[in-house]
Length: 434
Image 1 (cartoon, helix red, strand yellow):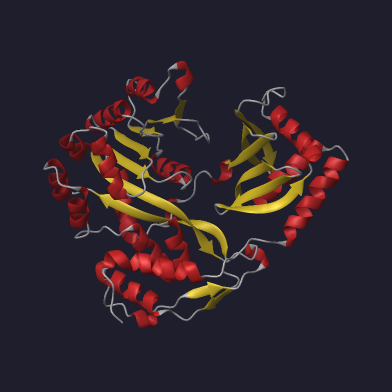
Image 2 (cartoon, rainbow, N blue to C red):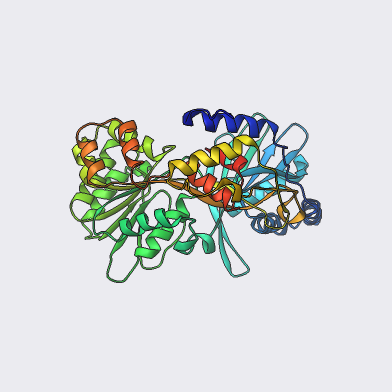
């Protein structure tokens, strides 16, 4: 077989696999049980109990959000499970009205306002777990759609070893976060696990010898021994204004929730140059795009090179179900991409003949979807003096990435394929999100 050029291999594999893979839909007997219990509570006018049941089952099914979507004759209740929206059951418009009133009342929203969006949150305790539910309403042509974001405080921080770093990337991050200054940027599209990654790193740095201050929008979880401030741009308490005030509090470590403009970027980089360790985020798709984004915000390259230490780009991908996997026959294109990737990351001595791939039949434990839970895949650039000199000289992003490949850079796709080879996820899933 003629091996395509490396830049085309991913697209060829993606087209072949994603066009031919059998679509797996989430379905389970549990969904009917949820509907039965919720509707029984609503019939008995126990709205609190019905709302509590929905939240409990969302937690049981590892859902991050509950969506209430209004249609002409019914309202569809959907859970976002492993980032895939799943239809759970339907409510009548009359049933939904009582649920909506209870949601608004619980989250201190105005019951009589239906023509403008509202958002706030309420809290509850389930099995000794503190749960925050962030409620957002959106007026539409028929009524109001609602999305409830479920924040489980017990899952905000995980063990550092459970962030799914391979040993090379783990070594990079551990070296970076132990430094006394510099800037670490975590980048992603929306909903890629930023809270867990940042809070887990902060928990590792959170010792009595360090003063740690965060600047968040909003504060999602309370962390012990860390000073957490919340911006409020409606009252002109912007990231830039608060960050300048925060620096007068003599911190050792600063976490800025997001860099949105040049002023915040300039202040954050200045802090890293004056002996502070700064953690922050940018909304970019890859580590490489982060360099372009920062330079396009008019930060001088020599300042960037002197301030930035590490870029962590990440995605969340669905983890395979361990209960229903079976070994699959590998395609020629799968073998080709594995062999070429191994060559790129200096592991060509590993024979592709010994690498197994699996597929899944679907079972009740994974809701017949193949997947259960999620893991991270990463692309990490740790700047050394060679890369810093390239940035100072005005090198292009392509030149910087090409040079980084000579050291320890593994692209996000490669990190994902390696995790598919280790049976954590599937190649189809990696290609879906990258």
